[in-house]
Image (tube, rainbow, N blue to C red; front, side, top):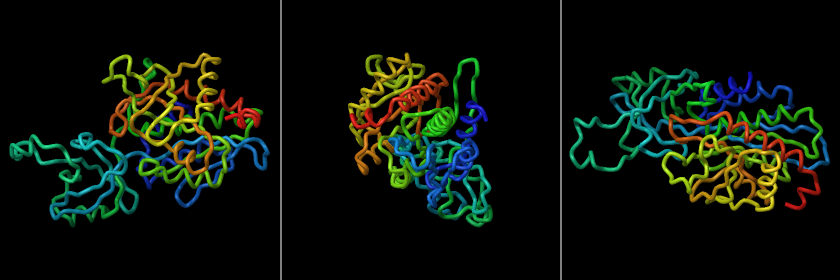
Length: 351
């Protein structure tokens, strides 16, 4: 697939946390030229040079998306669910979902709450809570829902098809956190596969990031990186912030974060990234985040290695409807590749 086709396929793929198999299949197909390892969590990893004594640079992206998991089926056939990942409750009502059945089929459903016609005044003014919502697949009984192959533990993901506006270089779809990063990591591994580098490039496609950065720990333990570059789809802030506060706007380039609540970025590695962007004429944004967290933090804390996060701004992540641009994506790839060309032992030891 070319890059556009791959981004669309990755966005469309069903893959809430813990159920990333369809995404992993795309990664394996795209990187068939590498010797890939997939573990029992469905993490995928690879390295460019076996038995190399060069510094090991792990390029990571997480395959999972925010979704839901069925908790119980009510007698009327609707289902209580638990969010997988950091959803805002306001993003759920009226959203279409697909529920994966026990035999792998996808059943359409919609998230519903009590219609306004039946709400008491205090209910209309109360804050939303997913505990008061259900998934409805059109059944009229618990038996009918179960006959579809749906049960406790069935996973669900938004039912949204990705579209690409070629004239504007604009993607609309779901799961760009972090499928846009997955595609970027694939492009970097493909672009640099036959290039002589001062480092040993390692690929990490990890699972269950949205529920606590779980899978990347296994990849890091196996790959033993000396430095890490994490690709992310980050929340864009350009539609609700004052201009001076915009740090992740569309069409403004890739975003490098100095700080979030999970990690203070190694300032020496960040400086190298910013200097490289300036040298290469790559548009870049800098941010200090008051929330958030990434796989970079998990590896940085557990392994003590320097890590940076190269992000593509995405409007309305952790919802079913998102926007991102090809130009920001290309900035992210160019920057990561330029950094990899610099990471010899002398440079890594200075970080």
